[in-house]
Image 1 (cartoon, rainbow, N blue to C red):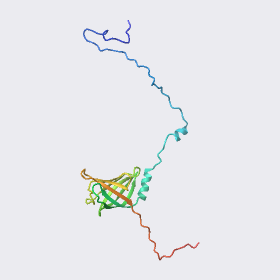
Image 2 (image 1 turned 45 degrees about the vertical axis):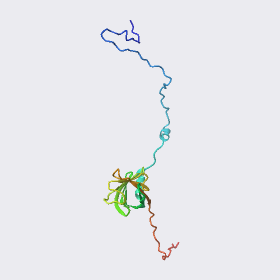
Image 3 (image 1 turned 30 degrees about the vertical axis):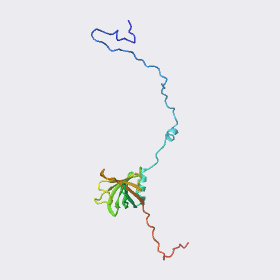
Image 4 (image 1 turned 120 degrees about the vertical axis):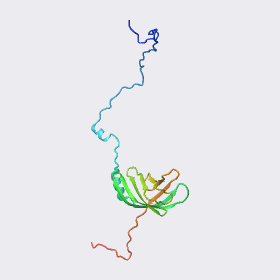
Length: 194
């Protein structure tokens, strides 16, 4: 005697223990089924030249360029988020050294006439700037333990204080033009002979 694929629980029932209802489940055909199709073979030229964009940006080279050409003097103002008191600010970069895609920056920052040493990093790939104030006495409402963060380099830098009760502020900087070499008026113009 053959057993049908659908078995009723009443047929398997014994007096000692009831069995759960068993049903045979078979998948139904679906219209959404798509068979796997292997990709078409391509030329080696397509593999080499048509596979997609290639990043040509060199952050290590840009870091070296920034270390050489970064303006060494910046000036502007510091504006706290609360209050309208603007303080003059000056950043002097003593050294800029390329380390991989980072530029190590060391110098001094003067806010409201109070100068303190700074040290930080400028990421050549993302232009993110992190500056730490290393002095104990800082100008304005700046406190030891906070940091200056610039997401687009030096022009707009925000002050992130070390405490939640301090509001912070903005440091708006622009590069100072280096003075042109002065030429004495009384010196005659020298011309070549040929």
